[in-house]
Length: 87
Image (cartoon, rainbow, N blue to C red; front, side, top):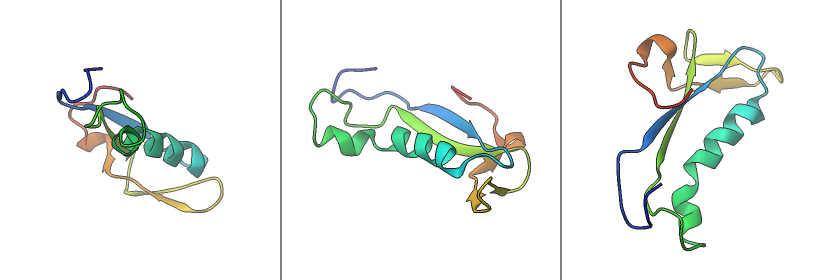
């Protein structure tokens, strides 16, 4: 990670949503990776720009049924992902 104030291209993190996954597991990781800029306003030493670009992906379709029955909307299908840094 770069020093505070420096920037580089964010690392794409593809979170795979599978049918019957726990909604909170997928959305919790997504939220944690998305909140770095907000946390930087409360704590020094964190990057001012998010080093991650999280996205939720699925094998097919753009809605995945979760274990609780709540639908999980995904950003892209696996076939639409041409490059990612972390799965």
